[in-house]
Length: 273
Image 1 (cartoon, helix red, strand yellow):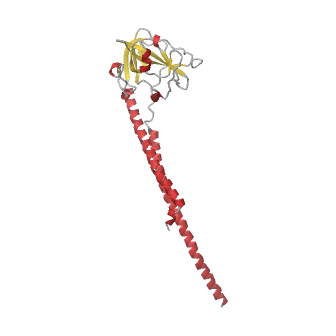
Image 2 (image 1 turned 180 degrees about the vertical axis):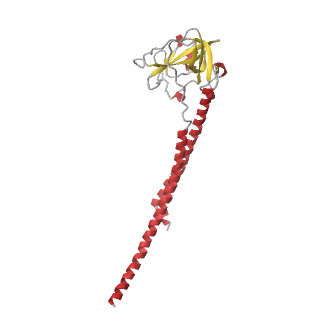
Image 3 (image 1 turned 30 degrees about the vertical axis):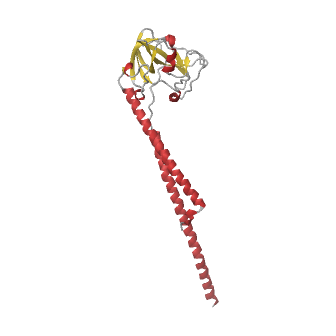
């Protein structure tokens, strides 16, 4: 009855099922891994955003990269802005609008400075035109903001290139920007959230990062892939059962035909007598 399982058509089906199952297992495990990774990141970022401010020097310094665990920690720094070395960062849309980030060094003393992202301004008439930027406050200021690691092409997804107009950059990379700086830059930068004294005009604040659902979609996708395994196995078994039922039905019909012919012949003989 089950010899049909060894026919070429059914062997091909077995191979497909045996290939699909480990593939779905792998995809499910990958999605569960992404869920754990994103959940851990969401938890870490949320905790950092809610933590009490600490002095910048406790978490970052020139030549000391910002740790991933310290991303978005709230830090404070005191110094004076250096508008002469201010830059704008291209390709920074905000709320669906094209624009730039305003990057101004804050000189903290002892030949050190930190890059401060003062906020967002809308783009000019062309991408190469310098936007209108509210001036940085003069004199000593107290800055509070979110600590961010220096950007790279890998971390930002933005491809750096040379030949930009003067005063414009694509990546906020303290190491590269510091090569043309008169002071030692802290590795990383500060995303401004508040400053004292407050200026009369300032760029638009950069929104707080959206930590999302912590990978909830990845969890759903992982469960979905593993449900597909059950569907594949269930469908395979259902096809086998249906084939067996069809074959038994055909055998029953073939066995009933001779019996019906014999009965008809017997009735015909009795009628002749």
